[in-house]
Amino acid sequence: MEILFVASEVAPWSKTGGLGDVAAALPRALAARGHAVSVVTPRYGSIDPHAHGLHPLHRALDVRGEPTTLWVSRDRAPVYFVEHEHFFGSRRGLYGEAHDYADNAERFAYLARAALALPAALGLRPHVVHLNDWQAGLVPFLLRHEHARDAALAGARTVFTIHNLAYQGVFSKHVVPALGLPWDVFRYEAMEFHDQLNFMKAGLVFADALTTVSPTYAREITTPDGGVGLDALLRHRARDLHGILNGIDVAEWDPATDRHLPARYSAADLTGKASCKAALQRELGLPERPEIPLVAMVGRLADQKGIDLLVAALAELLGRELQLALLGSGRREWEEVFQRAARERPERMAARIGFDEGLAHRMEAGADLFLMPSRFEPCGLNQMYSLRYGTVPVVRAVGGLDDTVEDYDGLNRGTGFKFRDYHPQAMLLAVRRALETYRDARAFRALRLRGMAQDFSWDRSAQAYESLYRSLAGP
Image (cartoon, rainbow, N blue to C red; front, side, top):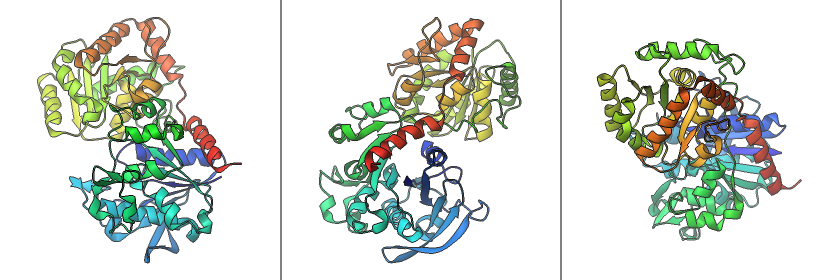
């Protein structure tokens, strides 16, 4: 099958979260299964085409009368970069700098039209156009209404993936004519949302099929608590909504080969994991104590991640026999809470504000436990990295966390520890269970090995998407 994949970020060229990882890995996994996959994304100012090995294409797209040039990364699943100096090339950020760019509606409407102009320009005939998050939300409508007679897109079906429903691309209704859209779209049954224009809703209304990144999150977003104002629409389209769990890059995240680690290890020989723990304690300035459990947390310091639970429970947590290592950035007052705790309790806590890819790998390898108390989590990747690295996750049972972590039964089943109530004491109870199990070396080793035996490769996810595409496009 021919597949056109549209995403606003693709790792390693552009990334703010899990979308960038998915847009890099899923097309490659589909290509490995024999499909012809092309990816379309902006060429942001942060992407130097020469430094990143991109090649210019001497074919211009016509986007509403404006010529647009392209760059390409020649890969098994080629990535085409849309060049527009004002909308993308002159910007340092993807979506904003401190604040969202005021013209994001125009920027991503332009990406949508450029993506749909690409097949005719390059001789592609996609069976499926796969859109990702609100930035590509206009594509299904534009395909139906501006490309109805486009031979290159004849019969193409659309799949729209929700990576995080909390981010919807909501804009003033006054942008409707500026985007070249008819006012007919500004109604409740189409793109109108509380008297504003909603790009996410556009994708949900007009795409042929909808997916999201875990089965549990697919159920959660059809409820008032999880639907962020769109639950009624998602219930209406429940038959078209599929929860397909994300995978992880098992080559990049492999403790047996990871170039970021001071020692390597595998399920067959865990010796190197102890060396990674000792090295991480030294790197973070924590006392080098092999007998004390080291708990790690890596990610954004944002409401979604349950940071308020950690802040509320921090004093009690640090009063237990453990070490806590945190890597991340976000809300300033939370950064200050963790930095102050690290200064006051240097034997118990280390905080690194910012992001460091190598340190993230070393924390996954060196920690004994990994904490993810998320308020909501569409899929989550760190819990899957943790399982692969023999680091036992302690998670709230929501979204992809619930789908990927099996609660330890105290005997011989389970891969981690889960709690359900969004309350500091519920989290602390799960941590206490984990610490008690840690003291039983045999049980904890078995827990590690069960986690390391899980399969979170992208091939499994690609098979599920392949089945969905075939159901839409036919034989």
